[in-house]
Image 1 (cartoon, rainbow, N blue to C red):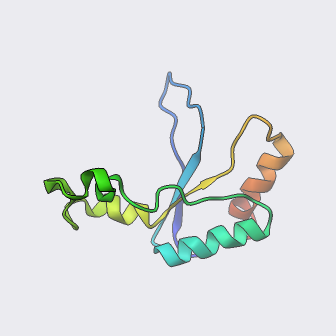
Image 2 (image 1 turned 120 degrees about the vertical axis):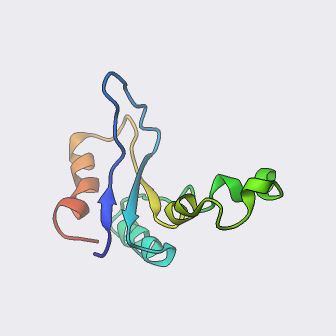
Length: 108
């Protein structure tokens, strides 16, 4: 698999709610990211793309000065590289290991 997986960090002294466990695959584009998400779904891992559009390109901000394309290149790049892995209280250790396995062992 091309790209390097970047995981979210939990700052010292803080506890994250992990509503979504959003990761970033640097070095890939949206098409490659979407193929990876499809492969995860084929393994019954309900990965999802929730942030495919940067906030500054949504209707509320689109007409503002900040929304001009290219003004936030890292944000625009990240929107093509991020996806979320399933996390919720009913996931047990076995399921969590299954979700993590494509990243630790065989690549999707």
